[in-house]
Length: 81
Length: 282
Image (cartoon, rainbow over all chains, first blue to last red; front, side):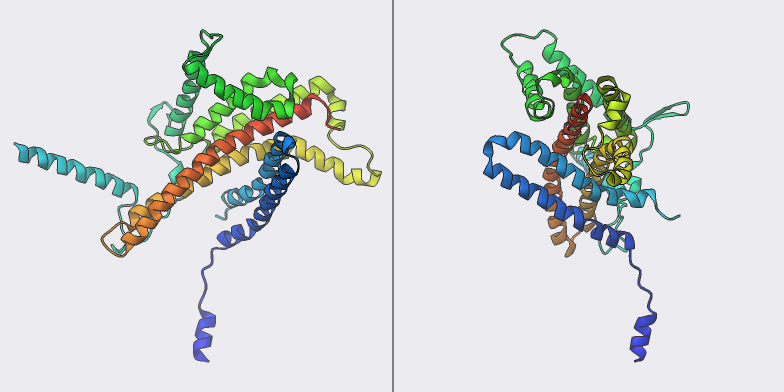
């Protein structure tokens, strides 16, 4: 019981920035997977439209990727102290 | 005599190793000091020379060098163009055709060939600036200082706004930003969002994307290189140092891909923004 109390009073030093970035990267990860997956599917169905599909694939990729990158930049902009 | 030379060589070798050690914080595993974690301090340099309050730093040197290389390369290739290309002109034409067929034609079509010189110089300048993070001696992507990215993003921003207002008229361009035939209550949300996207989010994300990619890439490389040095001592850490060195190689190849990809994406987005300025997309 005393060990439990001792453990409860131990302060944990967690870097919430790193945890938050890990959480923030989940969404873009799923999104980039969807973008490339569907683009490959579309190219397999219509190989003659590959040039046009890959253009939109890269635009979609960059729009999704920026969410993860913003998560990386934001702590440097809004850092405490 | 030979002994003297050998002593000098050994002294030089020790001096070099000591220099690397100082750069990495001069400490190893189990030598009583913590891991010298890389951070923002890896992105600021002492000025190479100063003129008054103007400090000329390594990223500036890299930027000037890249500009000169791009100008000299294409200048040498097309100073006296021949119908049957040879040597350096062959190489330059390969690059120009790649930009034209992969970036310009899919989004702008044939009428966009006017913008080919702009896109080609943009692509090769960004690509070279990014590549500098992998070339020994330089080993710093100048694009990871946001000051070098902002002018490029502002240039593209100014260009597509100018083309949009010129080709569609002020009201035509602004009213073409949102789609037609939507129930009117939707417009209350749609119009501010679309205006925000065109005037603020598009140029902002264009710059941040390039900056953050290079920033993250450089940080990743520095972390694994410093970790390799930190772990390399005659202890169990040597095993982990080998793993870290392998990661350096992997990240090196990955960064090679990302350098090319970011130059490609920046140029592709520029081409699509120009295309949307030239005529309405609906």
